Image 1 (cartoon, rainbow, N blue to C red):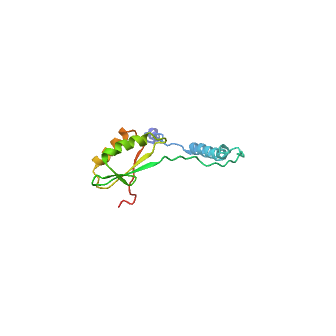
Image 2 (image 1 turned 120 degrees about the vertical axis):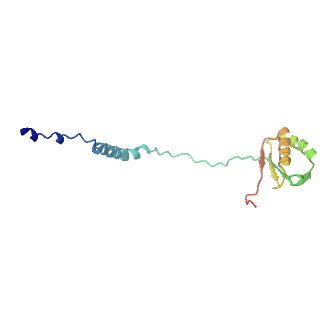
Image 3 (image 1 turned 135 degrees about the horizontal axis):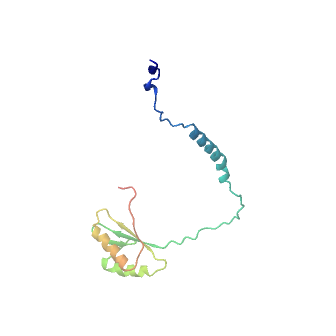
Length: 139
């Protein structure tokens, strides 16, 4: 009868529980260390720099306002120009120093073929700075 005093079912498996208290202690110590040392890392040496006044030397090249209408008519700075003459004009402008920028302003309904033809002539004759002008209002 004494055998029933030792119950075999009382033996329990160890619980799988992680003790996070040491982890929290270490993290709090690191936090305090970083709070104390962070201001020391950003300390800079004060230097009285000399004062100088100068204006930037910006040299803007001239630009060519080139207009293309939907009917195919071409305009060089507001003056009408035939397609056959723009190649020679591009060649003359490409020799200038600094080289002028070509600003292409095309109508909304202008076929892309006309714009591509002007760009090809400009590139073929040495103009490398080509830009498009658009209406920012979107209307």
